[in-house]
Length: 230
Image (cartoon, rainbow, N blue to C red; front, top):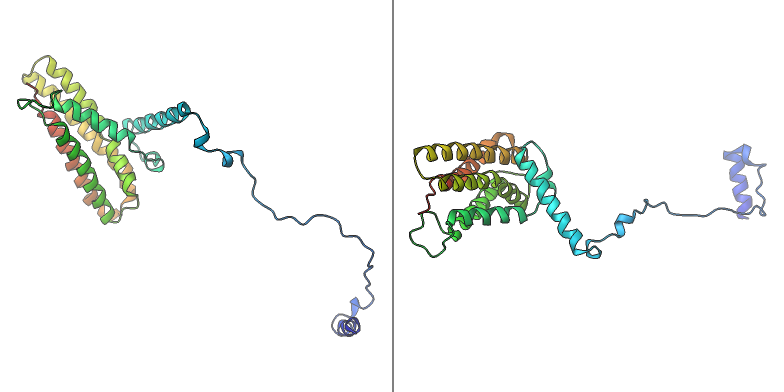
């Protein structure tokens, strides 16, 4: 009855289909599969399965690449894409040790103590990061810390040069050389950090972000320039 009703309805609507018949003996061949994306062998790879040596070498290469990006600053997302705090930590500790003068208990040392430098650098970086976020920055908290920390590298190099210059004596010529070196590295750090962070800020608020960065590196530069170990 259902077939006759369907046939009658088919004649009324589709007259050409009235004489079409389908044999019940036609086999159905093939497979019904759900298409999935290609499975890459890298998806099964985990860093937990690799040797410790490979992990350390990979991290060291990543830190080295970030140092290269800071030495040749340009608008790039390399520091923002794979951020880490190992490089900033090493730079901060190195700078604090050199500013300390090698004597943690000496009251007559002409430089600040280790804890003072460490707190100033990290507290300043945190304040600049919070300022950037409040002004509408599009980068994360730790990405900003990573950029600010890595861009301390030129000032760390300046501190090393100043220590070498001070070995020859602390006269007028020595001060002029240190002033030139610190001024150049201060400009380098400021330009490098703004090159990485400028695009993440609203166009009408970039000056409000650059100004605290300028003060941050200026304070560190002043600490380096006025360092006179006794």
